[in-house]
Image (cartoon, rainbow, N blue to C red):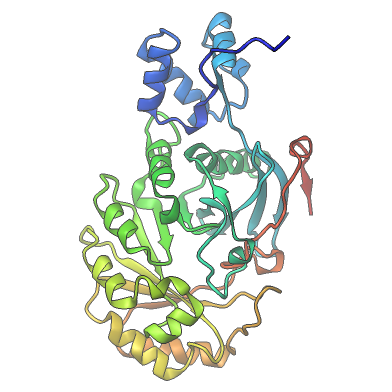
Length: 367
């Protein structure tokens, strides 16, 4: 005899719902008023609830109905590593057993969290450890937002009162390759009923997906834009970033110039320095010429080594000379000191290559 068919609607992950989505769910599927959606949203996104029983201002019958019809897609914290410079790397595990990484970077009163948008990445930048994983899947908006909530929970236990002030979508994955879920996560994280983060303190870093940049510029939340440039000529850039074959530098810069910026805001161009590849004084001159007249700044990132690539970090003298040449030509240029590279948490080093069985996702280990 076959099993009975369950005709109920599939479970909805509340953490992945915007406030508007949640209002619709509560009204249409639970028959409740909007204020109940407000309460639930606050529990999930402001208070970081991980269980329906945490929601003490909801009646027990309503909590039971929520548990039947919905879920809370909380990430599990598998490991927290702390660098000598105070940087923390969190390895987080999804409900289907995939591992992702997120990084907390302290800088005085500022605390920046670098969050992931995908498990792995499909874009194959030759200097990046994440690229060696390939793309496993996109993260949904709830998994993106929950990286912030899990980091807040870690901070509450280790540094009570410390707040995350800035978010950068620079972790594992290409944010604009997961456009819809990334933009939805903005709405969730900036909602005043939830995490209430400022869109002015959110930065999206892209390898240069031109259609995505154009779409992002039309969104009502004008987040900061960072471009992973890494070369000033198409031949060099295409060798280290295959995306340049589809979206060459000229098309990329046209999209960046059209990106709307408030008066004091600038686009950031990230430039990973690779010894003997893109770090000569001639490269510096081409970079300054290429970006002349744009509302921008350049962040120089000395390559962070990892076993999956054979590049070398330039010498300190070469890095200093490169920066001096770009600045001499009038381009605001800053050197990003590697943070967390002793725990493989620095830019370009994030990669897990690990898939966990669901039964292993509740363990917390520190090193």
